Image (tube, rainbow, N blue to C red; front, side, top):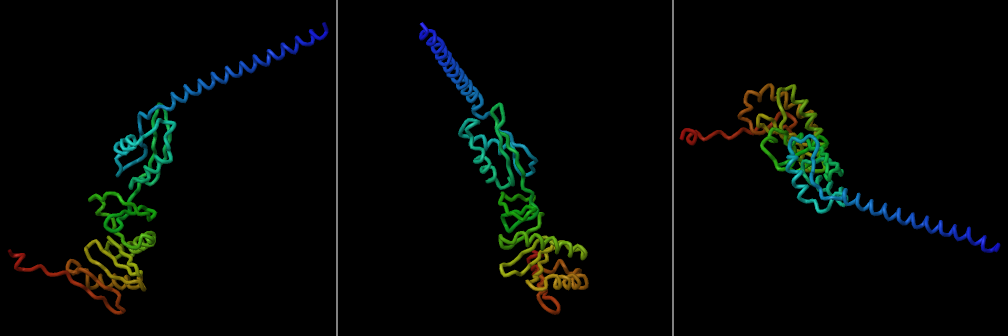
Length: 250
């Protein structure tokens, strides 16, 4: 009799434990089912790509269409890092952030490059001296044209700004600057005149050129193609070819 009484509480305890485990299993199953439903609801195909940020040179609608055409997975399975890399391959995109949004959408925030100068025949420079290679348009023709080794863009930009201030006082405008591989400088003025400076005593030589220009060359600037100022005393002037009188008359 005593043993039977002891067995009943043990059996009830076992039943309660089994019921608790069963309840936990049912709850876990429901949670799993609910999680799957939520996942399926969230992980739907992207219906919109939004491109945010100021853009003067980029066509944001076109960029959004091209991004949308390349999407190969539903929203939660998209590789955002890969999308960002694709954006940074665009010449005009300097920086980009990509995030998911709902209803299923991709939101892109871009920082556009701001060109401050041309670089050679095909490139542009931003304010930090980085080169980028977009399709060049006529509107960039008014930008200063810089040339030199790709590793020296910062040096060329700094020299251009310094020399531009120097030339302002003489009523001249610098439109281009070239740094040769051996360190020699050549300037282009907006009046079409080229100034060969060399690599030594650059500031001293240019100060002498400005003085000579004011005194003797300014009134003939339209006829001057190049001025070589690498000489200790004086300069060498190359005059533009005179038009053929017969051809002009004809």
